[in-house]
Length: 376
Ligand code: PMP
Image (cartoon, rainbow, N blue to C red; front, side):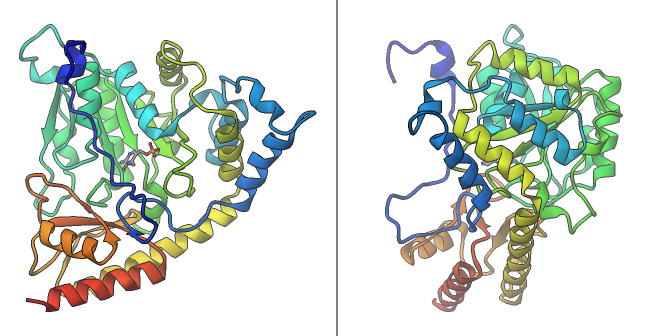
């Protein structure tokens, strides 16, 4: 706390990211990173930037392309959309923050805004959403998910300031079928409101409803913005690249916010590496299938141990022990060098979110669970 803080900073409750331990010996299953390395083509592309020019690193003298052309072209080709329907940013967190600023109205002048002006998101969801709402003064209402953590799309067919949720949802991993999402899009379109679908984990959900992504519907729904990240399925959390796909008007809105803030949010190495990743679908399809297979195996072992395991379309499992509380199991795993994520929040305090690691990591995790559960 400092006397120099303005009211915005004083009132902000910042997001708390998962722990990034300095010690190497932890098995890290706490921030949904991919356990496999990125495509070798990503490293080649970054190396090419570094070695281009008369001397090593010469390209770093120059600002990167503010339009992120190569990257956006790669995304457009991969998803079958137009170049003008793609926005790129410094991680999808930045893209989401810009989207809150661009499409959801602030209501700081009214003490209790009428319900129709509040944006909606689930009560159990990505905990950055209320932070962005706080940052931009956007009033919101959380909509309870059902007992089984599924989202009831009908709850979002009401007047609101806009809607946002991840599909699959985080930290539950539960997915909503695309046709239900499009009903929300159609309803909110009539109200002239934006629906943001955060597809951070959609690549891992393909086996559930065919393809989970609603990108192919952006031409029918000019109010639908899909947000994507290279941090999970592309194994590039360290590079910080995310993107959005939506109607050209929405993309222009995001560019306006970005250019009211910082024109060069995606650096030269990140643009080159991300474009190479987007193009290498064969490599990434392979590692995504491995993560899905490991997830299903781990889920079946945990169910045999009487754990509650929420059906997951993501690269993590949301689980509850039959015997231990959330904090107890979290602490016992940590003692054994395994980091998972616990959210000390109503309804989910006894659950843990476990990112899918390699088969070997998951064997160690499962063996630790068996040992902990057997102990009194
Ligand atoms: N959306 C969801 C639902 C997430 O879980 C995350 C990861 N914390 C993000 C967005 C942000 O990902 P990144 O900024 O690494 O692209």
